[in-house]
Length: 168
Image 1: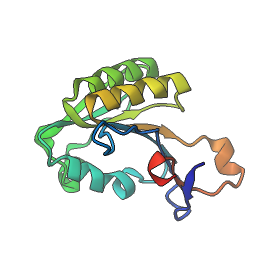
Image 2 (image 1 turned 90 degrees about the vertical axis):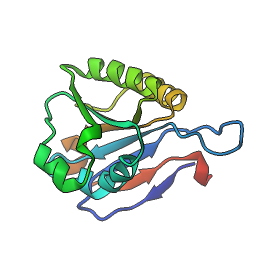
Image 3 (image 1 turned 135 degrees about the vertical axis):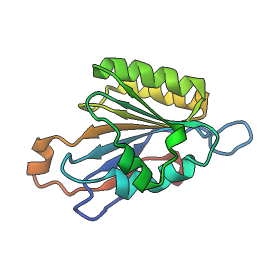
Image 4 (image 1 turned 180 degrees about the horizontal axis):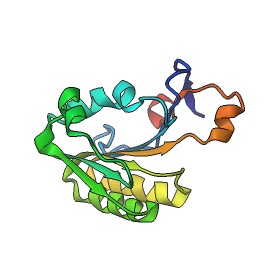
């Protein structure tokens, strides 16, 4: 069973919260992996993630961006209100390297949030590895990848989907 929320058509992203488990005290574990599917030509980070990134930036831990071709803009970071002194960007040449780097970073627990930018959706095994690492490290992780043009041209509605055991 899944919870689905429809967003305004211009957002064009999907967020899946991957099976967070409860810890021994009965509260939700802090380590969570979510998927964000977006359209390349629409600004989704500012609308959806920026408030969360600002909040997580108040923690003592770092914010990590794992990218292949994207380069963070210092003026954009300053304008967005993100803490420059806590931002780290690591550019990986391939998606496989990014999965491995994200898994290692999640396991360290040194980061409040890790955004991994991928060219396409990850396999179920890769998602499971990242989810397990996030739970062990107590970090938030975002798997970011662009919406493919096939589903965009098929007339599917853009939507925000949250899959979580919290709501079932």
